[in-house]
Image (cartoon, rainbow, N blue to C red; front, side, top):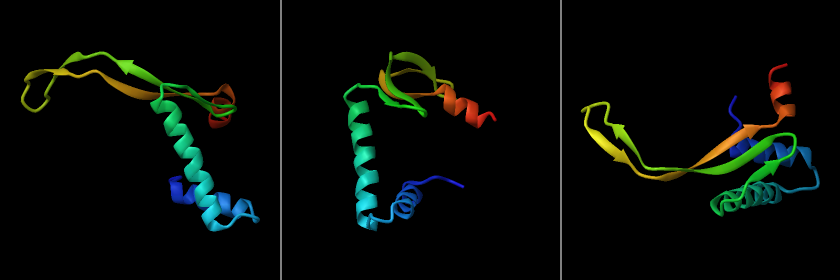
Length: 94
């Protein structure tokens, strides 16, 4: 099973009977928007008991096109990294 945004919204809606479907959608969308904004600004996102998301800057580097074998330069970029918490690792690994 995949945990999609729609499944997450439905789970929030079912778990909190005082919320409407629209309110559950807004709550999940708000959380995701806050998380994206924090990462875009270069901040770390720490979810206690789950893990830490952070941004890492990658320098330009040499690469190779696997189809043609031509050398090329891969531009610098930012990537999102995730490090799970010890609690989550322990639960996942049994």
